[in-house]
Image (cartoon, rainbow, N blue to C red; front, side):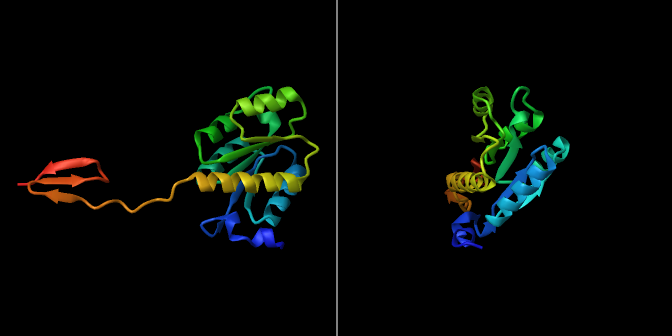
Length: 165
């Protein structure tokens, strides 16, 4: 492991970032999985769109690596499902034409790389995206306790006020 891979800033609260790899070709999935693992990610892979959708909901990845063919020419339901989860970053791999790159970005994909991108570059882009998204999430605060003023009780957590008897 390199110093960068062990850096605690490459985690979310001490837990390694999670990646879901949905590339179509088995060797591409394995290669991406290996590279992401070397960079400290916990990784799940699948080429099945239903399984990917289920993993998106149950595994809660920080980053999803998708095949650019899932975006252009016909956007898959997986891309739409990923976009519904605003805290999940997406990187489309294999966009070799300008049209494919533009369509990917217009569909809401966060980053696009061509087939000639190295797996190390993809892993570093995933880590950078996960770090950026994780920093953007505000820290959760403890709910404020209810306050009482004479006969009035105000509960900021529930956004309710109640008359006390």
